[in-house]
Image 1: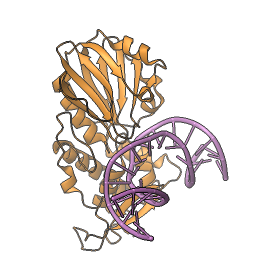
Image 2: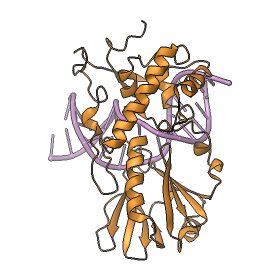
Image 3: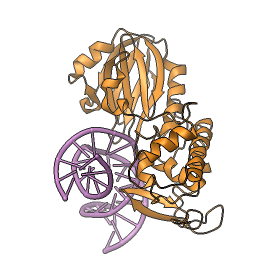
Image 4: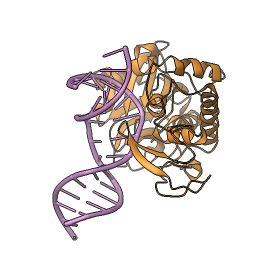
Length: 278
DNA sequence: TAATGCACCTGTGGGC
DNA sequence: TGCCCACAGGTGCATT
């Protein structure tokens, strides 16, 4: 499940592999992936003949600068990019292929078909609703404890787990890393976000930056199907303290990790290290 | 206005 | 062995 570290790892891989390559042709075998423009033929025509100039990231979105256009790609649950040569067999669940003029190909695979691609004019990414409302980048210098305290206090209510999953509060966190940062900061997932103390929010801020930084350095977590542009797994899954560790001892105190459902999401925490009330 | 529930999807694993 | 069902979860939309 690609979250910020996984998308950043994909971005770095793609930047090294496809920048400067010219798109000769695009094959779309699952039109549902293409959201805008409506017409898949138009999508292809808008990008064919142009080179990929840059690969950037905002939250969990990949932003590819292609001529006058910005291709916005969201991997959702299991989307992945792979770099191939023309003669390589096309694997199952490959939905979009960017054929380059040098015989190489960038292929988009997505078993669950949840991923999306949108084309926007360069510099007008605010026209895509999900992108326009993103909160601050957690690994940017501008994301300070003070900024985070203000943003959290501005919410009138809400459990902290749900708030951290809200991309307009802070961009890039998903279910796995939310569970991890709450564990690291000793906060119960059902605690009220706006009612956290300054000390708790500062601890949470520190945990968000630390966990995401470590995960980016390790190439993300391969909890299910995630691999980077080279087909390699990340290393962060070996560092997870609570996610996927139901009924296993907490690394801090030995209490068994509990799994519940919160807001429809599997939620893992240590009931001793993360008490609901101090 | 905010919280909640559901749909979108397919592979996997457990139970029978 | 095969079938059925629950589950996994990011996002957008509908409902409460």
